[in-house]
Figure 1 (tube, rainbow, N blue to C red):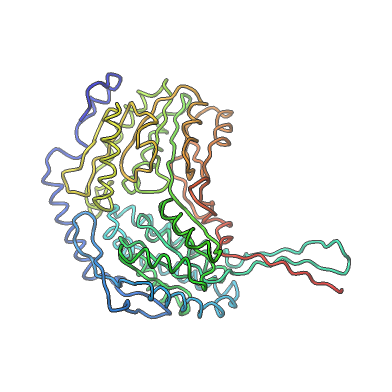
Figure 2 (figure 1 turned 90 degrees about the horizontal axis):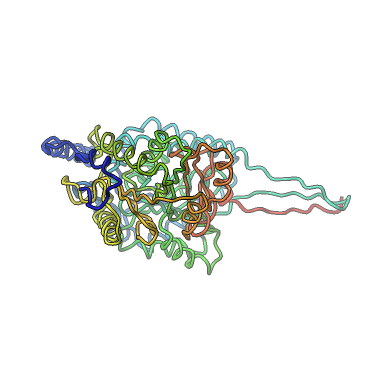
Length: 526
């Protein structure tokens, strides 16, 4: 649905045929087959668990309360899961506290071996774990398998880091003294994970905490608790001791109270959260009275800048990878596309062509699908609101722009042109398949627009000018920069943002720091 009044995009208009094949019947039969796949997961997955995992046991929530977990494409129920409340959270914290002394006293090698066993079990069960992710999250099965391998890689990485938590010996100013610096586990850590990467965000946090000798209580997102519970089953099989790893699912209604307990209980020493900036601020306020160490991976508004000197084909590949992974529902997705005026029209034409030829909307269980459903209808409404706001302010819909005919949680991949900085899509994170394109003239203008946000998680830019590459990389106010690259995440590199995108870093050799205390030991009288 090309909006009139976009004369500079006539070439893109010629590419306007639907992203989905014209005949709807194959798509709907695909959904029918997908429904059968979802039912099979719900009925027969060997890793499907529905109770909480606390102190090495599978337990019911207080009052045997349960809540429904649904597949996002159809609303089909997958399972009824234990709905933990505040008392359950306190019990899990006590279990973690009881498990702490022995786990903290274990050698780095012992912890390393157990994490490695957990990793091996994830690899062995990767297909079942991927099916659970697709069933509860909706992402294409190929992406779910990629997430599973990515999640496992953090257990592998931190199993290796467990043996490399080094202190220091510092030369003293007095000859009769020796100065030692020790790094020790901080204690019980509360881990609150998001729905968009239900396995990877858990292992990136828990792997680091367990490697250095902390115990954890995990509160998974209410939309996607099944992946966390499956990982608990594998942790149990790996021999992770009772109380070291605990999982307490809870419904949307119970989540605020459970989160408050995990941030205020005096037995908790640290919290690690991935989610929105708004929720992160609430958790920080809860944690401040007991001065807990906090690691926060919060919202982003990633700029994707394409300069005149860029290789356009390479930039389009990067844009597709960055924007449409998980249907645009990642915290490092490109959110604002800034394209220099000299190549603006050519870039838009190439990107629209790629969207039409490469993207297919459907169930995550259909092997041809590249774009699954959004997590729920609220997510769809947010995308719709941003598009409506942009169009009311003069933006043009080049392609897409509305819900897909597959169902209420599906949305057409959409590109907007003539976007300006006063539009909501440039001011707030979308978490959906929306590409808003802004035209700019100078490098200084692009950097000013990119840095105007109060968040700074990731940023991307494409350029063939070496001097410009150094200037822009150093000036972008983000924690992660992709230069001529659209996919950035890897266990070896630190992940985290600046400004209101969070505190601390995850992954890499720095990922253990949020779970360690530094102790200065002065040995005198020598």
